[in-house]
Image 1: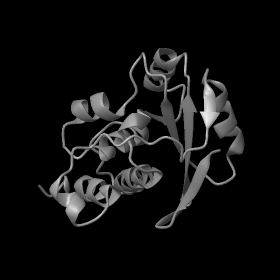
Image 2 (image 1 turned 120 degrees about the vertical axis):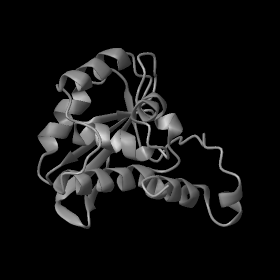
Image 3 (image 1 turned 90 degrees about the vertical axis):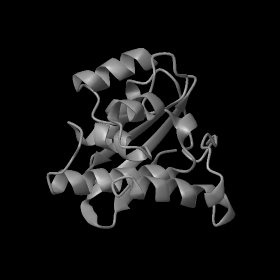
Length: 166
């Protein structure tokens, strides 16, 4: 049910995505993440188009962390920020971060390959039902012109990539 991928450019880093539905403790999870008790990014999955979008954001976050150019305070918050097509950090958290009443949560963990216990410990804190990551991505983007030249995923990833240039 987890989607685990090695970052090609950073082979010491692996990204695991876990999707939960019917979550009853979103507020507690969010507070645990803020307090540093959950070493993962809590994302609102209704804003995601495809798991590749999260992989791009995590890859960029690891790169920025390694070169010392992150715009946020942690790798996990940088992942959430990198999902946004804008440079507004608070807007990124409102749009892509979880809220206290959310019933669906995407948990993204950047880790070393052999840290399966870490993943189990984090997943055990979620009071909800884990589902396959590929399930139920809602298309919440309002992208018009880009869709005529490629897919929605192409347009979303392009907007994420160019936000630092514009």
